[in-house]
Image: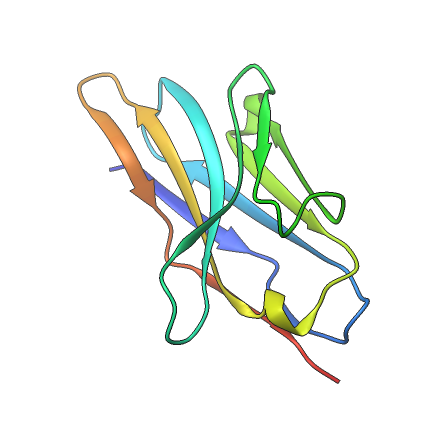
Length: 120
């Protein structure tokens, strides 16, 4: 069984920072592209950022210059450093990854989500 577990969400004031982490655990061979998505109340889930195993990144325009995605391949972990947070960043943030185990390929695997609330 392979799973993604997020951590690091919480309540922060506008202009503040948070760092999210997501670890892929289980019987894993390789974790390919990893990413973060978010879903605000009443809205569709949207891309925040992705990072390939080689380190190539892609960001939503709304977070460019404020958020930084990174990963540690040895730890099967992806991070999202969020700076200059705005109330419109409030959402449940989900980790996503493509993972291979010795016998199964898990495309588009999702974590359970972590709440980020930006409010004064």
